[in-house]
Image (cartoon, rainbow, N blue to C red; front, top):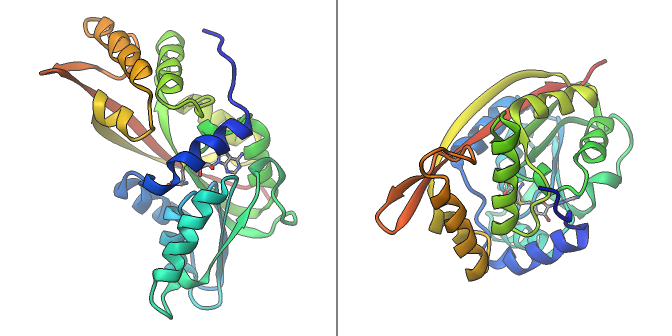
Length: 263
Ligand SMILES: C[S@@+](CC[C@H](N)C(=O)[O-])C[C@H]1O[C@@H](n2cnc3c(N)ncnc32)[C@H](O)[C@@H]1O
């Protein structure tokens, strides 16, 4: 199933349209990102593809008054929502100290080894090419520092994985490519951050709730339902679809990993 890959302009266009209603999903994945970041006062952390800032704001208390959290993103409209949240926080709240900047992960405007922690949640699958994006994150991470990645996981079976990626692209035209756990581990090792720990989360959804979070067109939603119905008996996508009245229930695996930058 070879399909055209979205460009970074497509990604920006999609998130500009979604910014006003975007809800970063999954409190339990946020908590795991914070735990794996293992921040201490005075550390400097970077949240790549911060969007509306969910991870950056969650990391901020961990670095204390003297530390720093920077959030970067490609899409100005998402960063504006993050800036609104920062403005709305109390005068001395840790959120006030989060710095926000516009940047593409393939060209991060920071020196080598600038950060103790680099985090990135639910965004690698939007990178037009995951490898240079991850390599840049590793470059700006100091030796011994932590690369903390949150993603949803594709099945290991290549046919199921290809169909899952196809459904994701129908649902969200800015989806480029998601990865299986083994592929994510290999990508992180390849950029010099072998994985030290992993946590898994099972997320239950319905086809309609899944589509409603990504501005999916009615035509594409109908096609998603058709493909899921066709997969009810033999799970062709790894999403374990089950009929639920007029809707279809799905189960997705989310994953948080941290890898340590080699010295
Ligand atoms: C699904 S949102 C995730 C936002 C946030 N990390 C969270 O957990 O809520 C994906 C974000 O990735 C950003 N993004 C996609 N490609 C990017 C790139 N190459 N460089 C920087 N940001 C990118 C999008 O603009 C969008 O804000």
